[in-house]
Image (cartoon, helix red, strand yellow):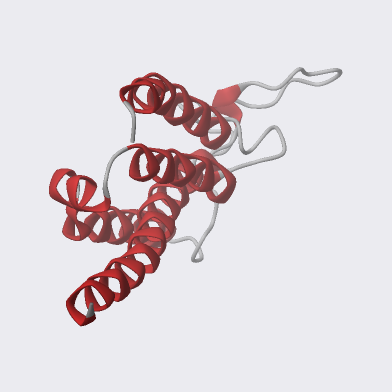
Length: 159
């Protein structure tokens, strides 16, 4: 691609990343959440792949890095759910809600614009899902493009 497209992708990728993280962080009080935010971040990865070549992007992040993100997100999600067992509570119990601290502030009565620290374990699960979807959808994009690259290489060999 041209230098202009690469420059635009270099500028837009951090903006897309921050916007995706915003959607993940506000998922328990607004429409959105881990899946939607992860999909936005994966779209940023697709933007970088379009601006640069497939082989360059594979060299930078690699499929192993994206697989690691997928596994970390999945294990984080299950880990938050299993952590409730340590408190003698059922699987996926929201043990942080109403307890005070970082995510457990009780919700105020009356009109409430939404406080980020009222979700209990839900924001933690949103972040885990966001990381998992970021890795998973980015891998899907890379695998789809790898099929096109292999087909292009076969056509060049046949010519």
